[in-house]
Length: 80
Image (cartoon, rainbow, N blue to C red; front, side, top):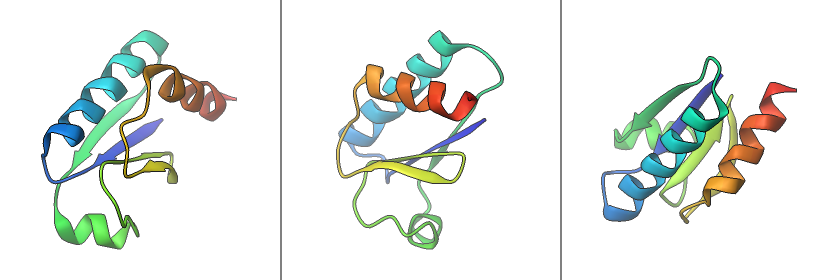
């Protein structure tokens, strides 16, 4: 499973990356977390507002920091 965290590096983007990494660790399994800060890559993914989280190619949230429970749910959904 691949989870991408999009954002230029602001405090909310860093917080989002931390939340996602914690949830991925708790979920276990083969999960790769990638931080995307390149503006061109963010635009190519059609992200309008950061931070944003994409799980296996699906944008799950944009413009806010998700909760750990939300990310855990996204991971469980992607596993099934």
